[in-house]
Image (tube, rainbow, N blue to C red; front, side):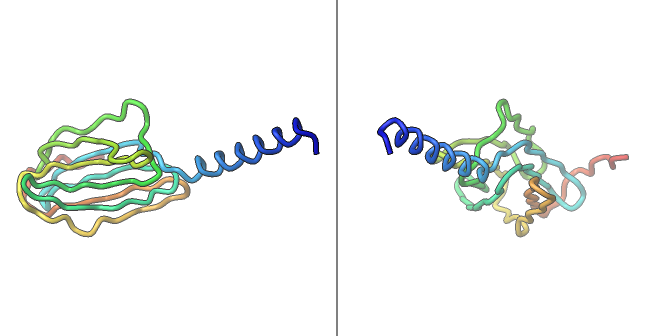
Length: 139
């Protein structure tokens, strides 16, 4: 094989490898917060692989959710504080990992997070127990 053909073959193989990595990456599309009589609920909408890891921290109280091999849509908007959640922010602790941090008013543990999948789209649901103002029911 000539040198020019080898370079083309190598570039094609690398390109295919990068394409398959991108196809498996996740993308955070939306973060929502709602409060109701039973507590506070967060929903994080994803497209792609949707893997996650959680970490509860104290002093100050926070719930950290890392999405390995993921990013967020450009201009992702964070919801306003509601219920036990005093703020929501994002970050990137290491390259390729997207992080969502929920600052909490009290040391309250969430119920076990639930990943709801539908095709290539997923929704991570996190609920914190507690009394909160009731929100209007959606029609």
